[in-house]
Length: 262
Image 1: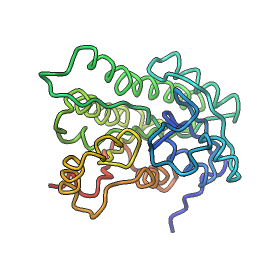
Image 2 (image 1 turned 120 degrees about the vertical axis):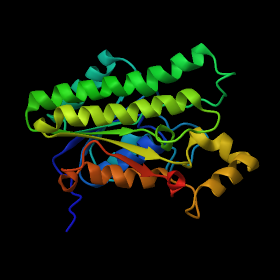
Image 3 (image 1 turned 30 degrees about the horizontal axis):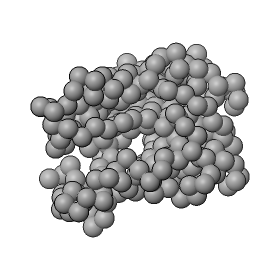
Image 4 (image 1 turned 90 degrees about the horizontal axis):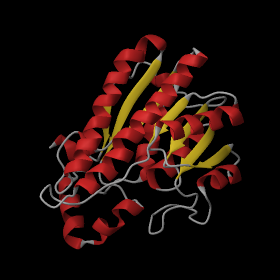
């Protein structure tokens, strides 16, 4: 029998205001976890597909009977990652789950992509995840009773995505960083996994999804008869955060409707 109860657990979710991060934070709260939310802005990004867009994520959680706080932060530095971990511990007393979700994309061929584009994407998608993992491991080791890290990568970390060289490279780094952390910290009962979503209905994808040609290409490349939703990713993260997933570590788990199976 699968028990998805997270009562008494504390989770930190980066990039929690919109899309995947918002769905994850709400899912973990619905399973009973107290949630520390962090993002660059408290409001959901405009143009998204989020439910209750008038409510910040932590407010939506509170309305639904859960416990949550919000800390505004740019999570791309170690100092900031440590600060948001400290804020979660100060508010809730401990930390059990860290979801490194914050990320950005870029659409340009390698010939057209600039060095500034490269630096901007890597700063968030690689350095930010590295910082979040390091701050999480430090806290879990100090507590001495393990923990869970879930890094949101992408199907682009497993296969090449057209017109997204640095994004694909950055998500590949997230996948292998997750594997390496899993090896080093399994003896401490710290699990680390990467979740690799396919095309999702989020504000980040609003433009591409409104382009009929791109939308048709995504539909054709996705065997399942719909594109993904943030809740599809949140459901997997909600499982990985529980004791039932204790022996799952170092995995790169696709949530892509079969996109990567071709």
